[in-house]
Image 1: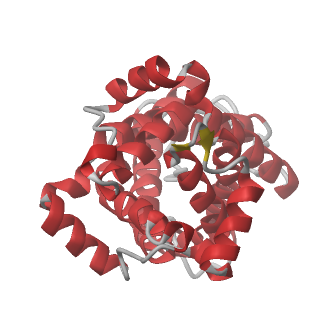
Image 2: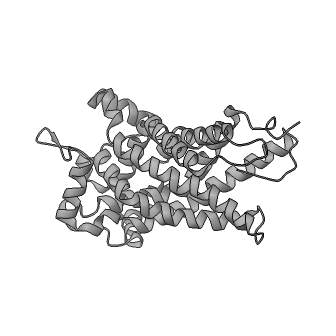
Image 3: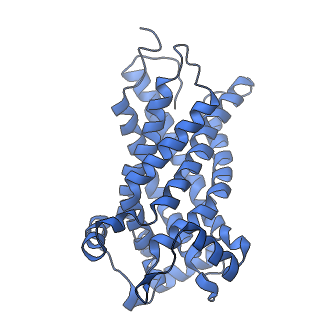
Length: 309
């Protein structure tokens, strides 16, 4: 059997991506929640409730209970099973299609375009879960009388449809798609190519150490690149109506108001919990991807090359 015959089926690629993302959500969710709270703190030039990430954790634990750091977990898992499964699965399937029989990956331009496309599609598919996650995780930042109090992700989605209309499930979809497009390039494309470059030096083997190094590098770059888009997504998805009008009209409106009222570098507000969240999330997703991919290749395809994702 040739290497091209041993390619992993598309449905398996999607399953591996979903399982990897779902598993990672249990590790990364508390960091996500802190990130959302930090991004909303000081909104509109008001006093910052959370001065630092540690201060945010202390405030949440003391005011809402220690288990509050897992508020919105069901939305986090569902988001990974929709958004991450789509963006990682679709990327892998398309790249597989253009990978040569000897295993040579497609040109970097093809990988980048694939990352952009799969990121946009993944964000669109996962937006209902994403908006539920943002609202459930940030609910505790509001006074009790203004909280939405969603019970779980499906309760959140059904209430959004009933109270705001089905189109509300696409609230913030543009910044979500832009963020995911940038994320795919700075996370997946960068991870795979960094791994290839390091392997070619002969100083590394395709093992856990290499996966950790690549995960740290991509976590740093993707956190910096996506932060200004991520805060826009959070503000739009969590916004409320004021005198019958939404707080923000579009992404540019969010950026302009943040810069004017909170300062330019507030676009990177929450960068510490973002990186703290991205790092273990990268570890978990990529290590799960490597393990599941290697296991399928070895057990099902009989491929002894010991190559993973």
